[in-house]
Picture: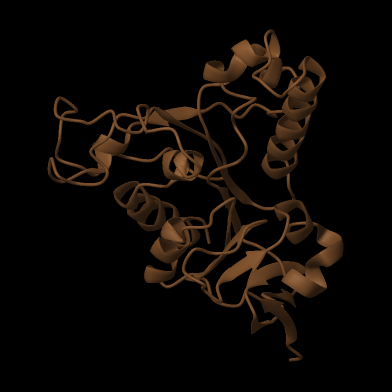
Length: 252
């Protein structure tokens, strides 16, 4: 089988076709392993959690990987999941979009659609809303069997622009996946997931939320504030990999 080499992060990575034709049906070459794309992630937290479970996982973002991993594709996710580019990037069994541009989609940012922040115009705000909604729609409705998209609670203008095809979100808190008070996951940040072909996450932690910190919402201003606020929680990432990583066995 011929491999296709793509340079990512300065290193050559070889992609092999993941599916084989058998009796007219697409079947996975290994019924315990999925080829997974973690989009809009630079930290590698979710990607590495799936790799730890034995899956062939890659992260993808227009920015480089923070760790310099050769498991990161520096590219637009829409190019990576485009069927026309399957010979370059291959096919994907699961797409998890962890930190899509949400500022213009979420309730907390709806005020900017009426009074723009300094340096922006109303036209800028609505254009950014359209772009964010289009990205969300394209990922949710991609030709991939299993999709999960993380996003805060949406405002009505965002919902009007997205074809959810009957998908409704479920919400969890990071502290629900924390084992002790000092855990990185012991935070308050209501997190929504829109999922296709995947079940809602089940909490795995031992806490009740009474000691959860609120540092995410009160992060200090600075150039790294957005990146720090969007950084994923390791306990939740591990739960995703453990629970969603087993779906292939349940549904195969």
